Length: 338
Image (cartoon, rainbow, N blue to C red; front, side, top):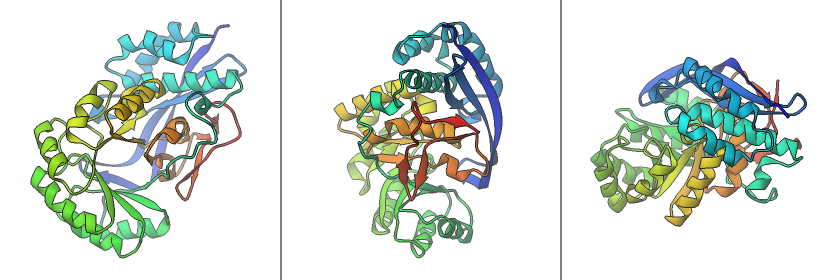
């Protein structure tokens, strides 16, 4: 049977301007990839992301060059298709992710199964997802928390007054805090901040240093009073081994690693190395979040709030209720386009 590979671009509008240590944005372009046999369709998502040199044109070109392989892949296992595509996608794992996730969704739907049932029991519980608070004035950050009561918040930092921000936010909620510095701190800043942050109910710190500062991270792993989770330092499977030297855990992003197939290998490798495993999202819609949700039961920590940060969406699928993953009854990854 011949399959059809297609794309549809969208513009996602954010509920609030979203600021991290290196940028601010109010919207996010995205591309939804579909794989269909004319009756059953699977969906994946890729976003243009300048920090990783991913443009909309690159996504479109990558889809085009994979068309023949994908459209003749009927009956192929998703892992085998990933291995066939991988060598020509080394500079664009975002699109490889979208194709891999779309094909997993299609493959599972075609067998009348959920995607996650290939990886774990459908009844396995998942960790609660955090909700992200981007950098803003303290009053606006407080208001974001008041607007979205939640059990766990990820607080983006990287300002001149980071500890003060957390002290002020702590006044309006008893929720667990996680800190993401997005590479903005030095070793000494991290060590000093961590002492105060631990007293303020912070669970861990994500990516405090520049991704290539491995010596600094080794020092932090031995001296920091809070656990450290790799994000920018851990993009692909090859990075997991090295992260064990400087971090207590890794944050897997499907777009950075190339999809569900390599994410499963990263989880397995991390477990071998006694690392905690988190998976997170970008500013993406329910298509991307529903694919991410398929590995949620395998994780220690989860950051799957992407669709909650949007004013508009691309699809119906997995949702969050006070941090808890709610899976729809549909098969595959549960995605149906709006």
